[in-house]
Image 1: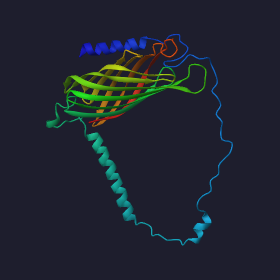
Image 2: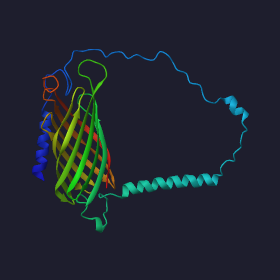
Image 3: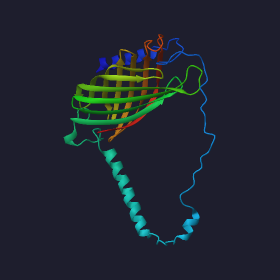
Length: 285
């Protein structure tokens, strides 16, 4: 496990050490002089809408008097709602493979479950002044699995115009667990990645590796690295601590990413480096 963790840390340091070039535009965006955005024509006219009915029409209709509900009925309805809420909370916090006290039949299945499902959302600020968010979904057996990820970056423009630049990244991976143990799971990943930038869209092969390891009780260490070698270049590495409370997962960590369009937009290689902390919430079964 130690060589893998050392490799992940080295790749993360490499990603953070590669700074942006002196190009005038960011990843996937043509270099252009500062220009103001074209004005949008607004609608000068207000289109009023008249209601189908009026209050006068309602006055002619006979009014029905309804008897108020008894306090007994109201108490019963309120009690049913609170009981449902407690049931849902119990379901989320008392299930999952990371229960604080595993029953004998589930011991040995934390990171080596025959079938597991994970769903999560995480996000945080980045060094460029914007922010990023991830949505991920995974389903895997004891060895083979699928991992889907969607990343959105919202960044201030770098050419003097108003508004913002957005970059959307996706990853679709098949995963294979090289190590599937109660206390640790190490995966090798391969698939397809895409990058949608302001002036170009890329599709390329994607390789990755990920690690989940128990530190103490319900606290896990998570690390992940993903690389796209061509036609654009991407290095994405992250490390986090994850607290499992039943099926609910609270995580926080740090992430670094390098994007390079390799000059496909206008012959000039535009490189962006993003890094920053993130927080997340997820479910794991």
